[in-house]
Each structure stands twice: as C-alpha cells, then as structure tokens.
Image 1 (cartoon, rainbow, N blue to C red):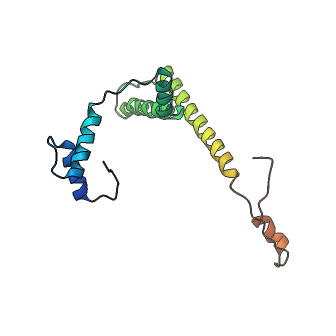
Image 2 (tube, helix red, strand yellow):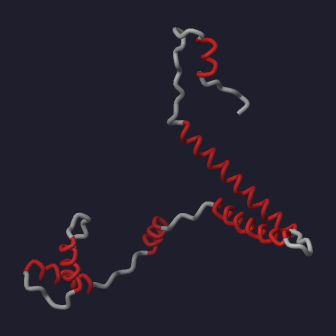
Image 3 (tube, rainbow, N blue to C red):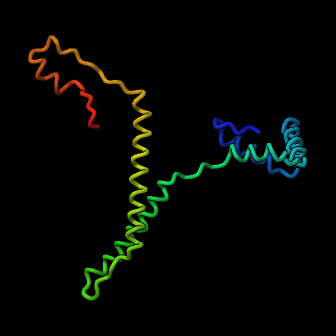
Length: 160
C-alpha cells in the first residue's frame, strides 16, 4: 500500500476502499494486494526478545523536559499566588501577609530560572563562538584612522 505524499485524492480514496473492503476486488492486481493484506493481518506477531525490546524502548523514549521548565512553571504559579494575595491590599480591611515559605519558593523558582537562562546562554555562546569570527578592517589608508579605529575594531577585555 503506497502512502506517497504525491498521490492524488482519488488514488488515496481507492486505496482506502481496498484496505477496508470485505470482498475480493475484480481487478486481479488489486485482488492480489487485497489477499496479501488479509494474510498479513492474520499473522501472529511474535514478542520481541527482552534485550531488543528494551533497546527499542530506550531509543524511542521521549526525552525528559529540562528542569528550567519546572522552574518557569513554579514561578508562574507562585507569581499568580502573589498577585492574588496582593490584590486584596487595594481593598480596605486587613493587611494580608505573604508566608515565608511562599517567598522562599518564589526565590527558589527565580534562582532556577536564572540558572537555566545562564546555562542556556553559556552553552549557546560556546556553540556559536566556533562559527563566528571577527573581521579585521584595514584602516591604514583612511584619514584619522587612529581616532576611528578605536571605535570600529573589536577590543578584547578581561573584564567580561
């Protein structure tokens, strides 16, 4: 059965009718395809050996989400909680207080977000640094080259 993306709608409909048909088609080639698909459906599927099954499952397992997603989700939830706590402050009455544990959770979530962002920046910078190169501009023939050159040429510094 051909599942090519360049098949026409009519061909796809005809193939669908063939696979769902209960009786053999009159066309000999279609009848052979129909009989083969019926025979293949009737075969028992043997179980995979344990070692092969575990290798296949490990190779197709979805990767775990990075930890910074959890930090971001926690920051959003805690931020929403803080907003809901602070919102009644506009109304006269008692003054609600934010629990110390909530502030600690918010600080932890923000620290996790900051760590994830710094780590992503470091990894991305390291990967991009290999493909980027600075261009040197020859300013010897340009008037006032020594004044302009300072602002054009990249300078390396140990402060960064």
